[in-house]
Length: 381
Ligand SMILES: C[S@@+](CC[C@H](N)C(=O)[O-])C[C@H]1O[C@@H](n2cnc3c(N)ncnc32)[C@H](O)[C@@H]1O
Image 1: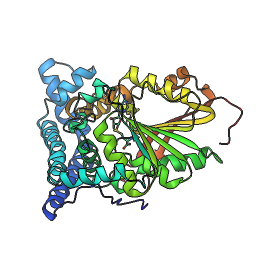
Image 2: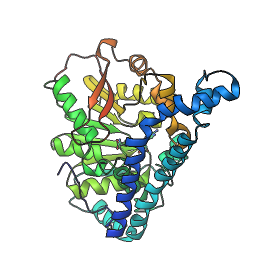
Image 3: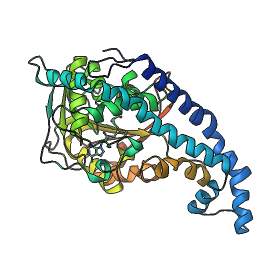
Image 4: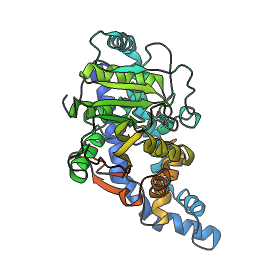
């Protein structure tokens, strides 16, 4: 499997015009986020805090007051409105080719899902009611949300996630090489020398980009992956089959796994913690401890938005919570994840937070991860 620019049969075939529109959205978002957004904190000092002081006779003190002050600055409001619109434009730019090409995509999916040459599998659970805190919210404004399922052979949620991710990450999303799996493979090599799993689990896999990347890297490892949405999982399964890698996908809640105790050597999650609230996150971490075997490794990776230098930076960062449907952005960013890992059972001396460089060429140049190791005599995989 090629690492970058991954092409597979379930991707919609885009026209020149559609690619041009996507390119324009990428350019707009790059401008707004890489060039304009870094100035928001300066705008706070030069426009927002003075406007607040004029109205209230003092500087803003709390998070709420800082947010109120930001919204008093016309330059910030202009950026915020433009960024919200650009986010919505992502979904227009990818929704159009998906719905135009959907009959073909669904036919390919059906064929791949029932092919006798299948390498992996898909286990859907019709009795599962996807976790409402995620399924009922259009997180990062993705239309229909992660849990969308339009019936037999439906793959829209997965296609939106993969294509939207490419536009969202300035054209360098999951379909173009999964930075996150690559970063964790590098971490394993560097910090867990000699460790190699025989069976692994990817929790909250979405379109299965990381899961497929692990399966491609370790063809002899039994890779399992789970998510809550059937539309997402059908896409992930067909995508993996089209790429010729073996992944076993399951519809399951991250906070209540049906796998046996001690049944995986490696458990990972990528960008899941910021999508779920505190209770689900703590249960998910407890489950990752339960299902990993003694001596096995758990790594939960996510966005590097924790520990902003000031309260003003924190409020600026939390734009996504309020305007981008990222309901748990701030919950995750301020959580004591070390405490969660230790409470789940990981010995404190095995719990390590990592500040990781993305693979080269990625715009988002850092990732956060926290790892732990279940006590046990067999530490070498
Ligand atoms: C931001 S996406 C990350 C996807 C993928 N791991 C990646 O890095 O590209 C988070 C995923 O977690 C899934 N998710 C959220 N809550 C979940 C839950 N309670 N159980 C299972 N999956 C969940 C969502 O459906 C979504 O697909």
